[in-house]
Image (cartoon, helix red, strand yellow):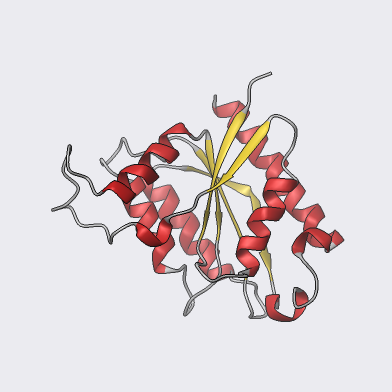
Length: 186
């Protein structure tokens, strides 16, 4: 049996983030044969600048991100919503992974976006923007694999997403759908 490698990018850098907890939930509920890596180090990646994206001298943190993405079969982006859109750290990661244009590390690979936010819509705008950015970068966005969990501060105040049966079930569905898309793309 071949293992599918899913690289997970979490858009919240905050300790105790409910989105980091949601990423942990996704990793724990991934189907058999799916290996989920939650990427650490997005905070260290410099803002994308074509002047520093030069072969042989790409900043180490950006090169490490690209290396992890190149080794992945698919991507799970887990995003909060910051001022109606995705956090800058996620947009920056997608920018680095989109280059070189047409042949970036996300090109042709399945990607799904999930997340949770304080508001009543659970970060839908941010998730839509992340899907749009991933698609423009060349990823194959899996439209059937999405989840926006509302009212995160209240819903997860005393409950980890893994212990919320409804959310855990939805996350498991997303991971199964992403895994199927990854297998089909292979």
